[in-house]
Length: 425
Image (cartoon, rainbow, N blue to C red):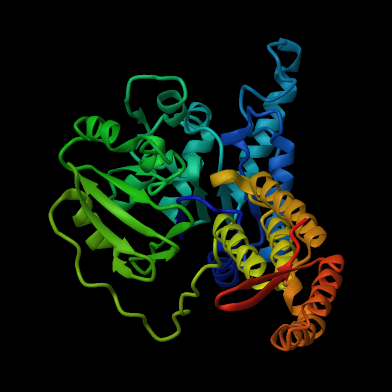
């Protein structure tokens, strides 16, 4: 089993994919490779959040072996006195990788991960697992980038301005007959005013890179919060999640939407350009029906904002409180998301705080229409005043008007009749 994820690997959107894989395989040894983000100062925090996610949401205990962070491991330095300890830690880490039943790797830098894995014992172990079927690989985001024959140095291009180019990948997917450049975050839309599709490349730079691929290779794209579950033993590929899988060659794309299965042989033919998309494979007896993934954090928060606005318009205090509480619950549910694309939980908390402020302002003004509270008292007095005016008792009618004004009610006589409203002052 090989599972590729475009993003959302430790979010609620991918829980059902993880659970089904774990329920099927019952792994005895589950390992998280922290290499892709091993250079980050918060590496331990990211690992802990991922471990908590798998324990809480999937029921899987995941180990993070030592010695896999690479040359940038905090505190490693260049002191030769530490070489022996680093070598022993690396041996322990490699043993854990080779002995695992289930391996996970996710966010970080594709370039850094490749520097540690390519041509080394961990890269060889990953390829061996795919070749032998010894372990299931669940690779997402940056880690997924490394598995193709060609890898995208996304940070160097998008953040540092490097010329668009490919790196040599691990070509683990090549062992399945898939000569591809694997691109996650394929439908990214964070740019807003500029094109950040294709893992922040955009159309212009992707066209440049496509020209550097050989004729028998293709781009394999996975949308965010989307997984391609490759069951090598059964020769099937199933797309799961919120988006699609795309095979792109020279600007021409074949899209396989979520919920569809296709034969691995058909995917190979599509990659080589020998066949367009073929009919999806129908489910077999015993197949688990795909469950639509939950909304993303952004979808949930934006929906809560809309409900809050509707509550203000309709004077529904319970709806306002529920919208705020639902954002709070969503933030807790997404706390394990190690990637936090589209703003993440910090952004969601900012939105929640703004709604809490507005909730306080609304409470100060009051949600109910003051006319509704005043009408049972004011309307009879308006009718009394109208009768007094009709009979010529204008001085008494003025007394009623002045009393209403003192109580904060403005009365206006128009050709259409008498109208009243609470005094805005």
